[in-house]
Each structure stands twice: as C-alpha cells, then as structure tokens.
Image (cartoon, rainbow, N blue to C red; front, side, top):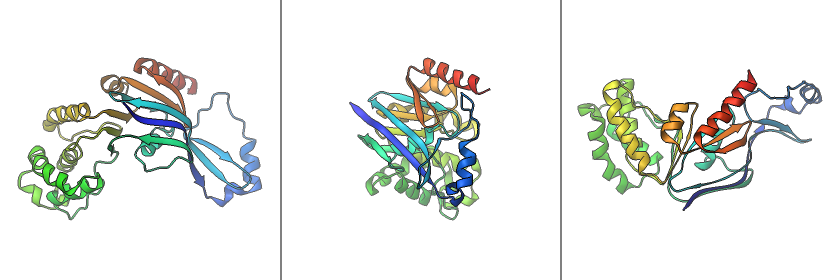
Length: 260
C-alpha cells in the first residue's frame, strides 16, 4: 500500500528583510561569481520583482510504500528537515501535493512540552496530547510508560528535579509507547545513560518494526545501513538520488568530495 505520495512538492520560506528588496542588494548578489559546483548550504535563494524567498524544497516527487525504511541524507540545509516537517503537516507545500495515509508520528524533539513544574505523571499526559493520543490511549499507555522508565517515586515529583538522563528516559518511554503507520525521525533518538541503552534499543527496534513506514534524516552511514532499505540524497532543496542505501551513500560521498 502507498503510505506517502509526494508530487512536485515545492516549499518556500519568504524573506522579509527589506534590504533584500533594495537595488544595490540585488545587483551585488547577482554579480557574485559562483563556482560550477555550489558549496553553500541551505536552499536556493530566489527573487522576483516583488519578493525574495528561499526555496527549501524544489519539485520533489516520490512514493513510499508499506515496509519502506527511508533515510534522508545531504548537507546541512539541504531540505531533509523541511521534508520531514512537510510530511508531518507542519509546513504546507507552496505548490504540489503531499499525501499521507495513516497516523503520522513526528519524533523531532523528545523534550517538547517539558514544563519544569509538571510532575513526571503529568508530563506523560502533556506529551501524549502533543503526540495526538486520545484520552483512552493516554489512560492505556500511562502505566506501561511508568513501568518502563523505572523512575520510582520520582514519577510524582516535578521534572525540574530530574537529571538529564532521567528526563530522557521518561521522554523516550512516552514517545515510543504508541505505534503509528508513519514514523518521522530527525536523527534516531537516544536513551540516556548506559544502563538503559540495551533496553531502549530493544524497544526502539520493536517500535520501528510495528510501523508501516519510517523516514529518518541523518548524517550517519551506520544508521542508514542498519535501519534503512532505501535512501534519498538532497542538495539545495532538490532530490538528486532515490534508491538503494549503498548507492545513495556513494552519491553523497561524491557531493562531499566535490565541495572540498
């Protein structure tokens, strides 16, 4: 089954700096010599008579089916995170369409919603609401989250009393409590202290396996090889390659070499 269908997706960020509209500014930028191989980071800066904008994604098309584990690789600002946020519905395409079928779970910031005066138990509810869980789902997952993170009596203390490792444990347990059809990661999530790593890796593996589709943006070849069966290479908002992981890593290596 098709889970994601992107058709000529363009995403633009407007530039509101008034200086970008000045004649001097436009003349200077338009006459800066550029190398044959562009090495700048970010999307493409474009201008019309009336506005300036960054094209963060440019005519991106693909289909992701059940069972796909897709890695996104490219330089900083190449469009990976923008694509994830468009998949999540945070950004709307300026043109083109992005259709998803099934529950989408964006896992970009584990500590989002971490109100320091909330207790761990209250934080489970806050974070679960942000992840789109219903009241019944929250009631179902809360006992399991508490058992998994093993915080003991701290679960009823304010999270400002937690160490970083304790906070990550709780956030990880909440985030991986409910499976979804489409998982979106901006780098795979870690799990804090060493005593928790093995347990967390097993849970993460199960969490990914229960999903229909996973899309992860990463700079790690090891993560791509371990978790993905397909990869896309991005540069300046354009998708340059979509195919097997090893071939994608080879294409990305060429981009890196050309930029040196």
